[in-house]
Image (cartoon, rainbow, N blue to C red; front, side):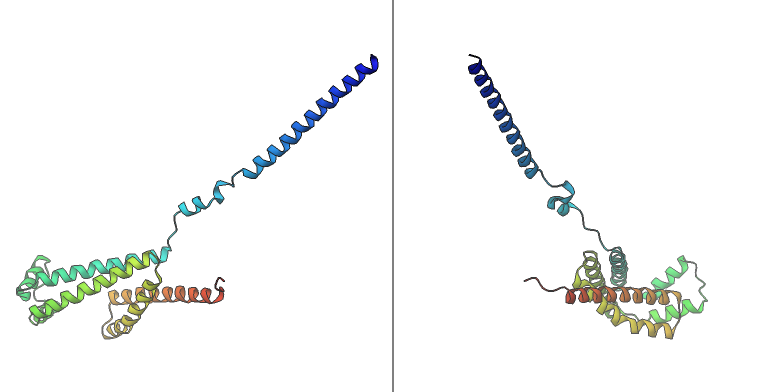
Length: 211
């Protein structure tokens, strides 16, 4: 009886140990499964990467703002030219000089009034059309640069380079702070965009195409 009791007790202990081992093994497998399905950190998820807003190039934003201001300026010139149609330009400028309290005997005022007599309606239409065309072009440049489009960079480079010789000639003919400031601004824009385009082209040549 003692032997039989010992055998039963041993089997019970063995069963208990086996059950415990199976439970431990199940726990290990469960823990491993849980470890495998744990998500990656939130910061590494592609959804968050896509949700993060793209930072704009601050210098391109500044150049875009400069171009949009130019567009507004030329729109104002175009509207002003069209509003002067069928009017005596000399009388309009004379009234403006009186309102601004300019000296009517001033050489500058007399020079402007003399030249105003040469402006007629066809010339005003041409001035308005040219102003609106340049305003549209400047607006396209500004929007394209804000969104960092390569075509806008090339377009701005070409237009800026085409105006530099004329601006230099105007400064040689008559030196003013406004002309110098405009030339300096356009030179800085040209240099920065040239460096940006050159760096991008160099990077494109160095990176091999994906197979």
